[in-house]
Figure (tube, rainbow, N blue to C red):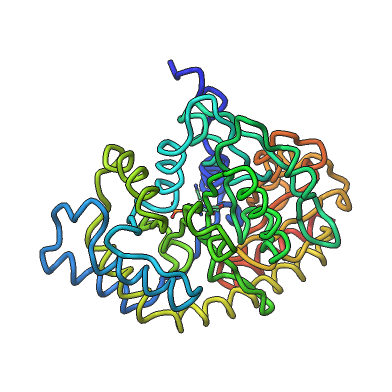
Length: 384
Ligand code: PMP
Ligand code: GLN
């Protein structure tokens, strides 16, 4: 039944692996969602908004309080000034923001550059637009996933319309350096490309590494659609409140599509997120420190269990190489892991077009209670 352009997309690996965890009772270090709530005052705001009658359609671009809070956040944190009335659009999570941007800005037949491993919604969004993806690999060099600037430059063709840039990067945990961002920006300027950035992990970086929005680089503000969302920053992945910052022309284009996808986004949660962006960044700083400790805890445990472990600078995720354990195919390995050790993880290779080197990598999430991490690690030790 399914249209041809969507036929390569089955059930997402996150749904498959979470279902596997539920079915087998395994510990779920697969899908990246925290097992503790966000700031209490934020939750109270949502409840109060619902009780207070904020239950009908909010304005299409988003409630003014949230657009203003996003504008203030971008200004204070990054020095980026956006007009909340014409340059900010609230979306149903980053997922809708990215899909609406691709649908609005990429013609059928255009090429869109993505880095692989890619977040799984990008290829689907590109296919929905009738565009074609061109994947540039991230490879491990000096302990982190990075790209070869020459390979990136070679991916640009006369048909290239846009590039999707995710940093901090899921699933590798790489935070692009200023040099890496400069190489991307130079290419965008040279070839007049639009950059769609996915910055949902902007606050979750470790060891003093800072996230830099691509829009802060010379010549990039006017050609970048900056996307973020509340899910990761405020541990509310089920709320699906996201946003876009861009020029009025870009925002108008994306909003034209967005209004027919969902028209608008859940009103009470928008108000709660506006509160959180204004008043809960100290809470987020504590979350970041806590997550860094959880990262180290999981890395130590995975190494003791025999995995080769790569250290992420951001996100919720640790990449491991499974070959020291005598396995070579991550998909096969993760499908058997519940039975082998009572744990669920994500095979990294499913996020690649060119899988060969990637089969060895498996992703584990550390956004879980310490006792859950410890229990998973104890089980994984049985593998050795
Ligand atoms: N981009 C990346 C890189 C993600 O990891 C996620 C979700 N976890 C999303 C986008 C989706 O964000 P949202 O839930 O706000 O749609
Ligand atoms: N972003 C989450 C992850 O990478 C999952 C999102 C989803 O389930 N689609 O694990």
